[in-house]
Length: 390
Ligand SMILES: Nc1nc2c(ncn2[C@@H]2O[C@H](COP(=O)(O)OP(=O)(O)OP(=O)(O)O)[C@@H](O)[C@H]2O)c(=O)[nH]1
Ligand SMILES: [Mg+2]
Image (cartoon, rainbow, N blue to C red; front, side, top):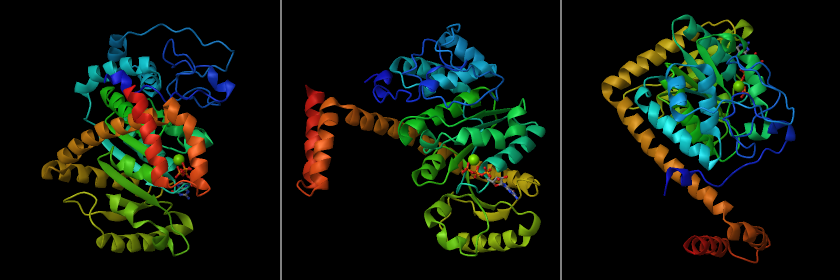
């Protein structure tokens, strides 16, 4: 199977005609039915490129060679970096092959960044925290790339607008690069795109990658699998926040940060921090050799934010010495391969014409209790195997 085969199928056409016009950073020759969906409504993109409202015709762009992409990414040409990311986000098999060549061409310059994942319930302040930490890091000589893995964004289409207003300062910083969540496809597909985007940003010289994900089920596990340091952002509640929190998510965290520790909320935040710290004490550590603790900060006043970076730095030193860092990166590469294969198989199954035709009827039979679930699964799998062999 060629690399291109891995990405074939699963093409998701834009539903909204307004999305059919390609922004300036769209890959050349991208038929709009192949490009990943682009969320409308964003003007004056953070990376200095202008979003051109639809005129019905895609703007003509100079075609870039694989070498142009590689050179542009390595020299941190933000326009080319953006276009390279658009290329890896494309669902077209043709773009996939070019994208993989670009990735291979820059691979030697990747892996050097500190990769940080940030999760938390909607409204916990993840974007505001990233704005605060990212701005502080840029002021201290770092180059920061911000990515989002948000499986819900293709439905709500809201997150990019929210993030752009919440990261206004950071989006204007020349040392920061903010990329909204790719949309369209399964969580597995989003993961491949996000991982490859992360590599491109590293190759462009961004030494800190901050990945925001909203805490909805599987996405935390996915992001934990992409980053070195994973933190859970929480807020104070009515005193029962610990009960409402899934133990599993806390077990993934290298730190729990109680945000919004400002104004009248400071004392409450400190009490909540102590509760989480006690709870963490009884959990399995997320990273071997590292003891996860709880902290407080305010993303609005910046209090405690630089200290979170100290925690991350200390974590990186610890895991590099213990070998946990190298081992985690190794495991992540393996799970990357597996998730690409799984994603391909899933799409290939559901895009299979025989399966597609039969699914509504089979599901109807199961729903009415006229066919056993095991029989239904067997029938669909047999259809799939038969057509693949034929
Ligand atoms: N007082 C105070 N408000 C904060 C703080 N951090 C965030 N907020 C506010 O909390 C609200 C939600 O913040 P966001 O940063 O959008 O939260 P989020 O977790 O990114 O939310 P989603 O992206 O929707 O999941 C906004 O109104 C912020 O201004 C903080 O440290 N203190
Ligand atoms: Mg957000």
